[in-house]
Amino acid sequence: MLSRINRLSKQKDFEIIFRRGKECRNDWLVIKSLINRQPFFRFGLVISAKVSKKAVRRNRLRRQIRAILHRHWAEIKPGLDVIIIARPKLLELDYRQLEKIITDLLKKADLNV
Image (cartoon, rainbow, N blue to C red):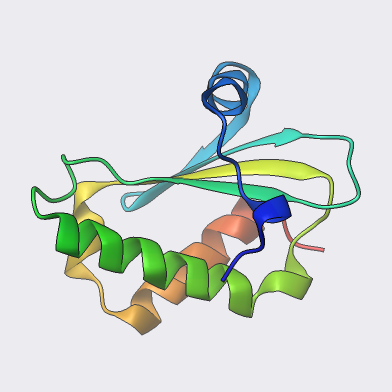
């Protein structure tokens, strides 16, 4: 589980990243990132009802993404705020495919150490 210090929770933080953040996308995810000038990184997830009408599926996806981020913790650059936005196609993937897509997109967005 991500510690409290590594989570984006305030609406104001999300709005700033949406406005000023650098965007990287593929068919399944969108990643927006912005420098936060702190010695740690923070993550936020956006999984809307457009992805699935069922909260159970959205929450499962959230847990899977958090687990993947936790697993690749050491590979992510500190000093960034990152929002991961899920797209509807994401439900078609299994866990291994999801992990590969997230790690590839993190590399593409230049968020890896």
